[in-house]
Length: 188
Image 1: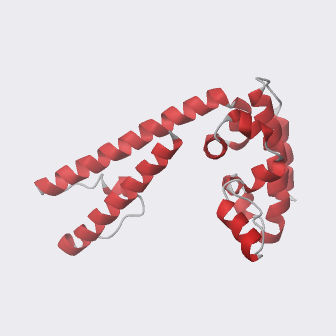
Image 2: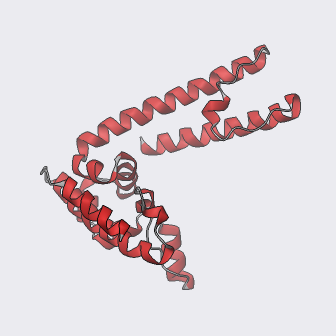
Image 3: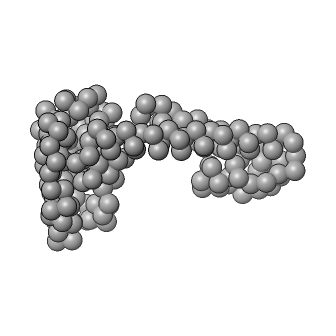
């Protein structure tokens, strides 16, 4: 289902790119940053009106899928979702394949999950090793200086490993305390 959501995003982006380049040539309109906002633009032309309607339908479908996935993932992984959010939890679950596999991973693997290309490039060519993957989406980590992100990502990954294991075994843990610890690490 997660890959379906990603495919919908790709389709919407391609659809809007084709439409915006056509509209720019035909009508001299500017490009929108948000594809779904572009589909809300009113037009008098019946052809463009039909195209815009289909774009809105695609965006509605994507929102419906996103809401369904967020509700489902919150039920499956409540600790991880509370700690890192539905988006990161969903990305990691999708990459691992199952909650059992995710619970068995060491925190070092969790830290670089989502950065597989960079990891294999590091192993193959000796380029710098990746410090984070999906964890980069964690709130506040992008503002940390480059040289310190690895330590914070490692700390977040260790807390996520605990949350994944608790979710797998059906236990509730104190994620509020963990979030405070992570926030302290980010601000240091």
